[in-house]
Length: 619
Image 1 (cartoon, one colour):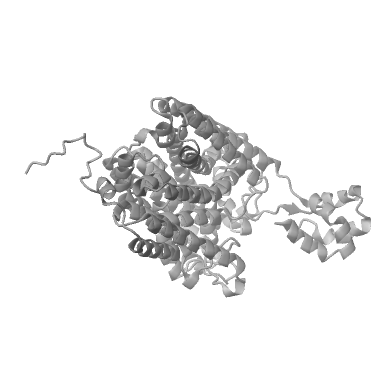
Image 2 (cartoon, one colour; image 1 turned 180 degrees about the vertical axis):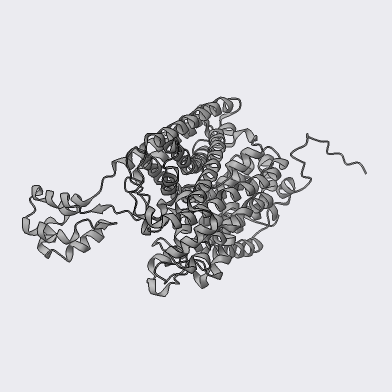
């Protein structure tokens, strides 16, 4: 049988064409960053570097307001591969994200940002409510959520570069790959570290066993060594088992230098233009891979039947397949929740809000809705098909299911003319997705620290030169911190992506709607709304970490970084509810905002697409 033959085959090796394709992709990205640098110099640094001169057209707005990331090509495919067709329901609302995000908030936020001259999201909150304190709180919360996403994305970019190294044959994308491994040679080498032969003999049962932390390895050692042996030689053994992944570190360095360099060159425009280029590469890579996958397996029906043979009939139905038969991936309550999760995550994304503020006109926003909805359709549905084919062709990935996209890229291009190069072009899709996310977040984080903290509170008279230099320093420092955090890579990439997205949504969705549409909203009300949403999300994740597993519902992805699903619903539902309740109640109990200020922002609103008109009204 085809699947059996493939499962027994040797892991495809990576050829020179793969790394060559990624190098060309990197060169193209740097060239675009240089072009953006020239365009940015036509206006003031702050407006050009952080908002791109408010000149985004429909295509640029649509294809750079996507939130594709490392999770799109690693975490999400892992979930499809593991649980089956029900994940199509899990992701279905993503197709209407632009309709809600752009359609509900787009026009009003674009108008208000122009009226107030706001450059960043905290700028907009500060100007709308005349409150520097509110602007600072918004800045700190945005930095908090984006820091989580940034660290995870640097890991994903480094992993893709590691994968592309010629002849590596190593597709270790799994979040659960061990940090400590007692191989035979390492155990034998302990003799040189003055570890007695009797102790080394006791370690033989642990040969090739992997451990995620030094604590788990120490616990395993305690079962085989005496207390005195563990006390004397434990640290030596643990250090010998510690893994140093040089290919990962090299990939991390290449990725960091590339993404920080082109973002430094052109700021917001570099992020936008390279995102547009990378979005096109993502689309090409996904469409090519879905064609190759279906051709390899013999059609979608055949792929589904083979996948069911390799799992069970649950693979084609809800709540989804679980290999242990204990967990329901997507029961009704969670399915209902996730239709809102992706919609509000898109609406509440600070990076997405900034892109709306940078749009050229209202007509641009309307056109971008159709473009982005179509684009999402052509990214996520093909990824589902690819992973169903992957389950048919490569049935036994087990805990390394987030290897499925690169595995399929290498497998389906074998034997094709220039197959290694084609595989590299396909792998440019996840690499581009990660770079797009990181470049956008670098701009938002730098703008938050430079514009919303330094210029507003520390040095209001800072020159353009000082702001430019500080922005560059901040971006370099952010990149350095992300590198340091990934010297021991973070785990559970997709779980971190979901936490960052849903946390930001619970914190900013309701306040953004209050900002845009509710005249009676007050500063205390908005602060209470942010605090209630953020607090509910953090509390749910703390509960998920602290509560014993036997009292938590066995639903959703199987990771240790997970929230507590109260009543079977995603915590975002509770976060939005608490944010809405707190915002309304506190606003109604506090002093209304100044009517004159509100009138300037809400009344006699001119069309941003038209030239200035006379205030005279003729009856």
